[in-house]
Image 1 (cartoon, one colour):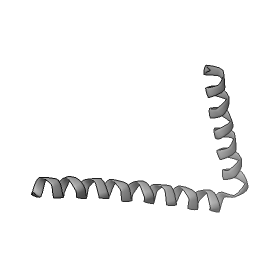
Image 2 (cartoon, one colour):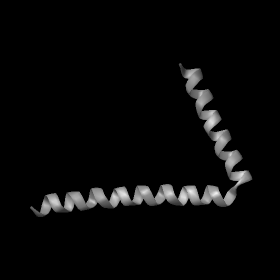
Image 3 (cartoon, one colour):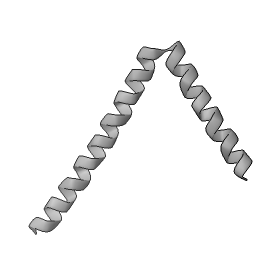
Image 4 (spheres, helix red, strand yellow):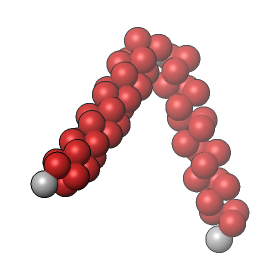
Length: 55
């Protein structure tokens, strides 16, 4: 099972490197979208806890 995990990780890294090299603008847009989604989720969690603490 460890070998399968290593192969999958290596394939994911190889795909990311290929995508970055062949389509840098699209790769940057994808990263920007992912970071925006994570930031939105963090803001939602913070808002939840603020509302929970506020009553």
